[in-house]
Every structure is written in C-alpha cells, then in structure tokens.
Image 1 (cartoon, rainbow, N blue to C red):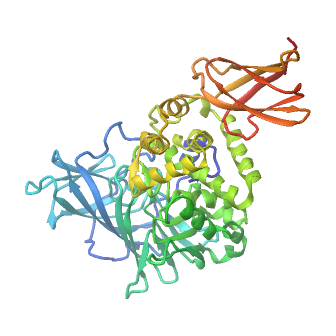
Image 2 (image 1 turned 90 degrees about the vertical axis):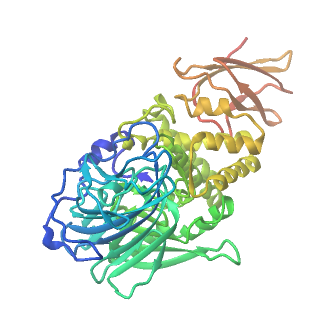
Image 3 (image 1 turned 45 degrees about the horizontal axis):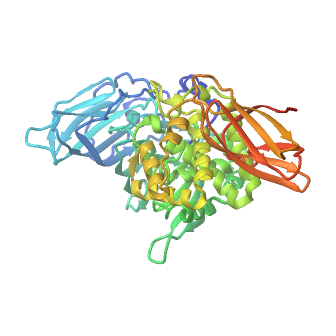
Length: 568
C-alpha cells in the first residue's frame, strides 16, 4: 500500500481525525438477508483501531481455514445485517475457548456445528466455548449473526460524486470492525462473499465471480488462502473495462486485468492504468505466474494511496478523479499480489517483506519499461525520502510497535527497497532473482519471516548473508562516509581514506564500494571493501586522476558527508 494525505510518522494522528463512518439510521434500515435471525442486542463501544497484539503466537490452538461472509448493504445509512461462518481447525494443545476478533457490532446468535451457544463479547473479542465433543484436528463451523453500524473497516456513504458506495479498508487489523475473524497476517484463509446490494450497483470482491439468479446478490469466491487485511468488498456504480490478461501457459487460464471506475472518472483515470496489464505479464515472467484468477483495479474509498487487496486493488477516488498519474502506485500494488498477498509476513514487524518488496519491484518494472535512468530516478527518490525521515534511527525489524500504523514508515518501504537493491548488487542479477524465485515458490500462499528470505538467498548463492542482514535489517542507520584522496606521482598510486562518521550507536558497516577515477585515458572503475570506522585503499593508476566519483552505479544506501583531495 501507499500512504495518502499524511506522512508515515503522522499517520496515527491523521487517521484519528478521519473517521471512516458515522453511525446513522436505525435497525429499520436493515435488509432481510440469508438466515440471520432478528437481532436485538445493543452495539458495544468499539476498540481503538490499529493496536498491536501482545508479542507471541496469535490465537494459539486455532487455524482459520475458510470464511463465508454474507452481508446486506443498506440503500441509505450505515446499518448492516450480516452472517459470517468461520471454519476453524482446532490444533494441539486443545484450547477451551475460541476468541474471534469482532468489535462495535451487535452479536445476536452464535452457533457451533448447529448448536446455539452462550458467548461473551467484550474488549473487541467474541469468546466462544468449544464443545467437549470436539478435539484437536477437528474443524469448527462457527456461525455468527450480527448487525450494526460499522465504526471502521467498512466505509458506507456517498462517493466523491455523491453516489452511494460501500468499500472495506482493512489494513492493518480493521477487518474486525465488520466481520469476525482471526485478524492477524499469520493466519491466512480462503474466503467467499455473498453480498446483497441495491439494483444499479456493481459489486467487486476477492476472487472469481459466481453468478446468482438474484441480480441484487453478488457472490465472489477466493480459493487461495489470503490474509484478512486483504479480504474486501466494494459496491458502487462502476464502469468496468477489460485491459488485457496474463496467460501463464497453454493449459492454464488467463488472469483478466480490469478497471472498475466511477463513470465520471474513466477518462481522467486512464493514464494511470495504460500499462497495468503489462505489469502483470512482467512480474509473471520475472517472479512466477500470477497467483490468482483476476486482477481488478478499483476506484474506492481508502485511507491509503493504494491498498493491495488480493485480486481487487483499491485506489483513492480523489487522486483518480483529479487525473493524477499514479502509475508508480499501480506497479507497487500489482507487485504486492506476489509479495504481501501470496507470500505474507507472518508478524507485523516484518512488514518490509511486503512494502520493501513492492517498492523495489515497482522500480524494477520501470527499469524494464522505461530504462535505467527512470529506475535510478525512483531509487533516488526512495533514498531522499528515507534520509529526510526519522526512520534511520530505527532498525527495520526490531522493536515492537504498539500502534501498527507507525509501521508505515520509510524503513519498511524505502530502506527495504534499498536492501533488496544492495543484495542484487552483491549477488548479481542471475543469483539474486533465482534466490527471490526460490523464496517465493517456497512460501507461496503461506507466510514468512525475514530469516526465511535470508535462507533462500543463501541456499541459492552459497553465501553467508547473516552479517549483511544483521547490519541492514536488525540495526539502525546507514553509512555516512567522509573521503580524503591523494596522488603519489612517484609511485603512481592513488590513496583513498574512508571514514565512517555515522553515530556511534549505528554499526560500522561492511560493504563493497565502487570508486571511479577520471584519468587522461578515460574513467577507471575500481572496488574496495569498506570495513570498520576507517578504511584505507590504494590503487595503481597509469596517470594522475583529476576527479573521483563514489558509487557511480548507485549500489549502496549511504550519505557522502565530505570528499576532499589532499596533498601528501
């Protein structure tokens, strides 16, 4: 995802001032739907969005397998009636109580395998006793009927043009505001939606569409396991256009690429999606075949500059209506379908495995499509954004954040992208991309941590990357370098002294560094290994150099504090 309207460090303040929905209307607004019984419980006060859970396994003893979500959207107002059936596998050691995440909505009944159970709903958790007859290895079928006005996570109200709309916006753990679930990225599940909407609205969701005899009911099924933060629905008056498709092979179906735009914005938004199908083809060739059945680019209500929901990416309506060119965002969110969606970070503080990858692979598309100059321009923008932020004082993976929104920082996005670029420079293109494919194929439709990426790259390259990951991922900062260089005419030797002048609580980095000297016959590019707080490198040259360029290929995330030629 990309941020919109606020910098990462200000996001939590921005978020709290932008309430996504206000309670309005009453129960008379509800539309009868499915098997939900009449519900009369009051709506509890919601918990705060984005609060991190305690460290450690999330919902131990349970594994969500599948969610069936049936929801009736109102014609006006924000009152919903819904039923979610969660299929939850019990794991050893067998717990006594299942706690599903659900907040701010009134629960009427809970059935487990058809049995009506007494439950407790407090503190954003729906606590459900496990029948004694069930044991480890069994799968619960938990039906929850609920109603109310979502406080967050599902945005109900007029779109930018005043037309009725409904869009979910779940990241990081806001799915709990509109359906019960194990709302954590470590627990992926398949999902199906049955959505009732007023005539005249088109409804988009994850997965593939399954027709229904009732034109007001839309059924979408996603057969691959996905994280809850990407399980979404969107309903509005859309114009749907097909852009193309990615066809992995003769025996496999093509993944259709479409846009779902408000009628007023189709012309203005077209500039952002002109190469959207090309991006799917590029990433399918570079990484692996597209992991899902379709990819819809959707104009929506979202907090973010883009949200990578599986097979249904949501983009901010304001930007598209204004005709902004957000093609870089489109590449970023498309890359997320592989990294973040198909391979998901299993804990929040490894978010760089999602955002750093999407940022870097977005830049790679433009390297392929528009040339190395555009790639270096994007990477330069990433570097500038990172250096101008407070992120250098923090490690990428380390301390736990109480507020998950604070993870949307330039470390996870732009330093993460630079880490991948430095790995590419160190390993070479062939080994680097082979290692990335190994990582992806190993964890496709599953979850991973940073060490899983390291082990994949080590398995392919044969290199020990522990020190590299330690200094760049688990410790703060980057090299800040000061250079002095001199020429010895008699010996025909140029000497370069390199000082690492970054703060003492940052590591002394070890990195290969390219130096390019300009001599009479042309440029000469040489390499040295920076190590420790001071490095002295000496090189034989045929004639006196007139200038020194440091890191001419842009391979290292660093700051150059000073370059001085001295006479010795």
